Amino acid sequence: MGRNPRRDLLAGLTVAIVALPLALGFGVSSGLGAEAGLATAVVAGALAAVFGGSNLQVSGPTGAMTVVLVPIVTQYGPGGVLTVGLLAGLMLVALALARAGRYMQYVPAPVVEGFTLGIACVIGLQQVPNALGVAKPEGDKVLVVTWRAVEAFVKAPNWTAVALAGAVAAVMLLGARWRPTVPFSILAVIGATVVAQVCHLDAARPIGDLPAGLPAPSLSFLDFGALGSLLAPAVAVAALAALESLLSASVADGMTVGQKHDPDKELFGQGVANLAAPLFGGVPATGAIARTAVNVRTGASSRLAALVHAAILAAIVFTAAPLVSRIPLAALAGVLIATAIRMVEVGSLRAMARATRSDALVLVLTAVATVALDLVYAVVIGLLVAGTLALRAVAKQARLDEVPLKTDLPGDHSAEEHALPAEHIVAYRIDGPLFFAAAHRFLLELSEVADVRVVILRMSRVTTMDATGALVLKDAVTKLNRRGITVLASGIRSGQRRVLDSVGALGLLRAATGDDYATTPEAIAAARAHLHGAGVLPIPAQSSEPAPTSVITEESPR
Image 1 (cartoon, rainbow, N blue to C red):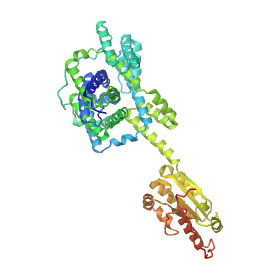
Image 2 (spheres, helix red, strand yellow; image 1 turned 180 degrees about the vertical axis):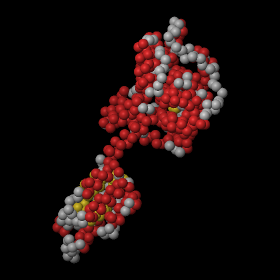
Image 3 (tube, rainbow, N blue to C red; image 1 turned 180 degrees about the horizontal axis):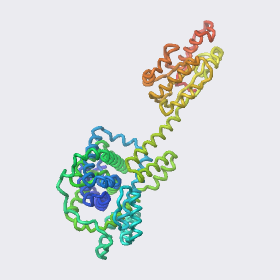
Image 4 (tube, helix red, strand yellow; image 1 turned 45 degrees about the vertical axis):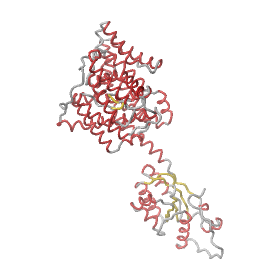
């Protein structure tokens, strides 16, 4: 994508118009006020654009971050939130230096979809008090606060606030279907503000006074004595900032051709942004998926668009603060409710739910945990459940199959079958991973081998092996040895050999003949020699015929 400054300027203007009501709304929702949201959009938006790893990412306050900040404000106050943002910035820089950005690719899609769905629900629920025109009830659990707000509304209905919030949300949703490129959010907010002022709607509470400019940078909020108690919330904020920012950057890559973000540099940029934003009274920031999508759709091609967006918001802060302060809270609630609804991709959710039962389970659990607990717990729960189900699926791929001996013997099979009757030797092929998730089942299957004298384990198709798998194999061999059954192995790979040797399993596999074997024919020949030596089979008569030259290897078709 070539650079086009004019399109970048237009994209930046468009994003700023979309971002203004969102920045105000998320600032109010966080508990620090609209000015905190604007400061974050300006400071963090500019720094993340300069130092981040994506050319198209737009950063600022987001609904997901607001969800995490509300309980922090309740427990620690505004100063605690600013301190948490500063600590989270340090953690993000550390993650960038540790090159942790690449691990984002291991987050399963159902976790991301469930996470997004849960965030959308929480953002919508958070707006209920302002949309109903009631004071925000006490509490840090969104479901409890929502219920109390509904109870307060029933006692003293405020239909003016409901009408404003509903009208703004309706204009945004219907307008987006009619003309997707038109920023209906700002038009709806302007319309609601004009109506509230002209009609003197006292029930429509405004945002309140805003400072005409950014405050001077300060660390006065920092309380060193509280740093220990704020580490856990800071970890949650940093984890969320990393997750949402890298997800947003990935979305931007998918919407363009030729653009690819640097995940570690993106983490560094977000870290710098979150180090600076608290100094100006701003809340923690992340990459914003909605604003980034608008940026891409309006033709942005470089970081200039995100910088222009921050500059325009700064100009609004310095020149139009008195006008912005008159915006009704109910109108901002309508903007965020519409934003939450638009976050839900019904088609993606339906496709994910229909994919597999495991995917549907992970999606639902992550979404429910996001609403009922918090976002970090939700992601951890989603990852744990997804990982467990994935291990279960991989473990099912491990198989222990008996292989007919005649397909492995060189030379005249009919003659060898008489020399090696089936009750003396049996060969098993191990397919797939031999690790902790599949080890117990493997032990049971191998330990139930019928009465034979020699078991040959063909291991060339073992894809991976860990210490648990090696220990289980050792236990199985030990049990077979106690029953008088010799166990030989063929096709052990070098990496697996080290694991087996570390737990003492390799020595057991070599105990009878002093070696393990590269191919199954070699193992069969050693088994024959062992049985001859034990007197189980008669020593074959010497033949004057030349030995056969054909050898079937491990890769021979079965």
